[in-house]
Length: 243
Image 1 (tube, helix red, strand yellow):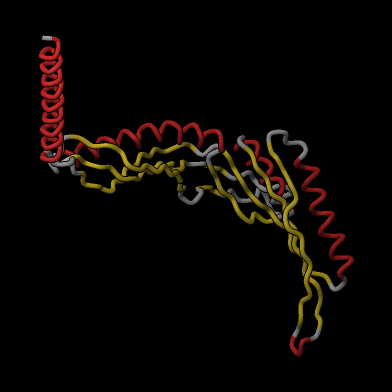
Image 2 (image 1 turned 30 degrees about the horizontal axis):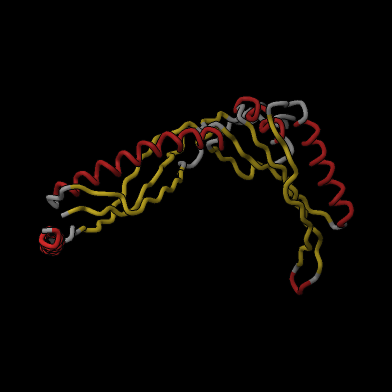
């Protein structure tokens, strides 16, 4: 009897092992029969943009003179620039710095030295357009306006870009949903995402008033309109749409 019980136990163990192996085989065959999920990779782009008021003015003014003596020329230019910098100190809301300064020879026919020409400039930056306009008017009594432009300050640009990133990513996801529907996909996942930003601004608008009177020591301040810049955030990348 003990031998018979042992023999039956062995038989039962073998049968259990065979049943377990058969179940593993069936599971493996079922997994092999099920096709692997397929994805379609699609490149997408989206953007968000808004107009942001230009809050910073940048301008350059220069003085240009001629003289037969380079030392005399340099002294005259330096006096003009020094006077401009002195005047600028009275305008606390305007940042002023020296710009380029150069002197070069002027030749007549036959390559003969005729004299010297010098040029020096100053650059101003301000968020107070009225204050900057007043200073420009004063400086134009002895200097020429070389350039005038408006831009968005780094702080204002960063704030606008942070908000636009959220909008641009939402627009990207909305397009991904459209693509998924067009392909009759069951779902999608973002494979790659890039975020870039930029801005553009129209040429500055300003009206230059006429001099107050002939020989006036000061020119009427220009009327300035800073306008706006278009800040844009672009989002590009790829999605995988599940077939």
